Amino acid sequence: MAESGVVEIIGKPVQELLLNPQNLPKNYLYEEGGAGFRDALVPSQDDECIPVLDLHLLSSPSAAQQELAKLHLALHSWGCFQAINHGMERSFLEKVREVSKQFFHLPKEEKEKCGREPKNVQGYGNDIIYSANQRLDWTDRVYLKVLPEDQREFKFWPQKPDDFRSTVLQYTESIKLLSEVILKAMAKSLNLEEDCFLNECGDRGDTMLRFNYYPPCPMPDHVLGLKTHADGSTITFLLQDKEVEGLQVLKDDKWFKVPIIPDALVINVGDQIEIMSNGIFQSPLHRAVVNAEKERLTVAMFFLPDSEKEIKPVDKLVNESRPVLYKPMKNYVDIYFQNYQQGKRAIEAFKI
Ligand SMILES: O=C(O)CCC(=O)C(=O)O
Ligand SMILES: [Fe+2]
Image (tube, rainbow, N blue to C red):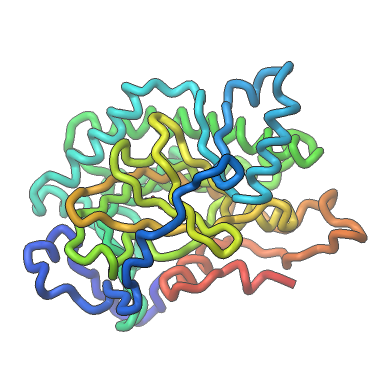
C-alpha cells in the first residue's frame, strides 16, 4: 500500500471535479490520446469476437467436452469470455446495478459516511495516490472485501439505499458459486484434477467487490476511466453497464471493444491464474474508456488465493517442452497495487 511514513493525499471524487470541468487536474489527461482511445476495433468476424460461452452447457455431461475446448481456447487466446446462461435472473442483475447507481447519486455527505481511509482500498473513494505525477482514473468507486465472511468491515459498506447490503450479500453468494464452477472447468480443460485450482487457492482467500462509477467526461479522448491494466486476481467477474460500452481488451496488440450482451458476465483470467497455468491462460490487458454524455457503472468481483498460499505454476503443467515460466510468490496483491498505480505490470517481476 502507500509507503509507510508518507501521508497519503486523498483525491477529490470525480463527481466533484465535474463541477469545474474547465479545470481538470493534469493527472487525468493523456496529451497523446487523440481520438485513439475510442477507436478500438469493433469485432466484425466471429474469430475477432470475445468468445461467448454457455455456462449451462459447460456443466452438462453431454456437451461439456466441446464447451471445455472452447473455454481453453478462449482463455489461451483472449484471456476472457462473456458468460451467458449462468443462472442469475435478469431482474436480479438489474437490482445490483440499480442499488449501486442509487448510491453514487446520493449527496456527498451521505457517500462520505463510508469513505475510504488513507492507505486502505476499502470504502467509497478513488485511486490511492502514491506519487504526485501518478495518472488518475476517471472513476469513483466503492471497494469492499466481501469474503471471507468474518472479515467484512461494514463501516465501509453503504448504508443507503436500504437494500444495498442484502443485494450485495446475495450477489456475492451467487458469484462465489459460479467462480467454483469456472475454476473447476478451467482445471478440467487443462486435463488437471477439477479441484486443482481451488486447492491451490485455499478456502480463506479474499474476495473483493468493486463498484466502478464513471461519470460523463468532458474530454473523453484524453481521459481513461480505468488505465490499461491486467487484474491481480485469479479470476474476475464483471457485470457491465447494460447500455453504455466502455471496456476494451488488448489482443495481438490491437484494442477490441467488449460488446454489451444483455445479462452476460464478462469473466477474465487474472495474473495469478496466468502463473498457476504456467502461461497457458493469459491475463489480458484491458482498460475502460469514458463517455462525454453518459455515466457508466460496472461491478467487478475479484477472487484471490489465501495470502498464506504459495502461488506457482502447477507441476503437471511444467515439462520439457514447457519449462517453468514464473517464480513462486505469496501475497501477490500487495506488490500488484504499487505497480498498478505506476502503470506497470507486477507479473513481469515474476517471469523467469
Ligand atoms: O469497468 C470496466 O469496464 C472494467 C473494470 C475493470 O477492469 C476492473 O475493475 O478491474
Ligand atoms: Fe480490470
